[in-house]
Image (tube, rainbow, N blue to C red; front, side, top):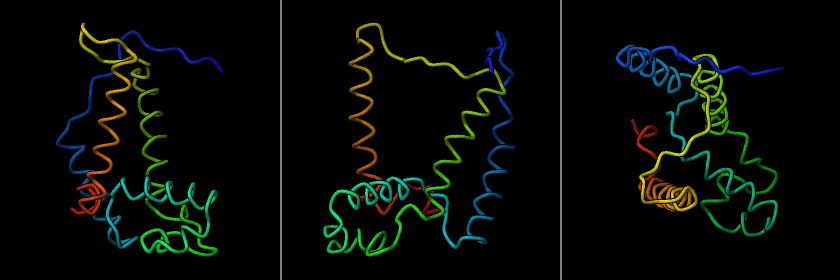
Length: 142
């Protein structure tokens, strides 16, 4: 299978329409799963799953970990994990279909690609920590 990128990507969709669709999806998520669309909870569950592989007794003792993965409980068996996977795959498919799938690094002229990626990683870790410290990302608290 050969992937060919278009030289002229399709225009972006109307943001108001996309916002209305997101509202319907959020309402549906509450109706069907009794939880919102938060993404930071999935990262916590992945963290617990990795910790459980390495140190099961630690997961059983720490109360915040035990809720997600104590004993035979699989921390990855949760709607937020599937939401995270679906968001990633859906974004990739949408970018591919609309001619926007490409690898690039946005940066200023005075910084190297490696420095930009390091700063992006540090910033992402700080934001992720802050999101979990504040009861999760705001999309799950809507």
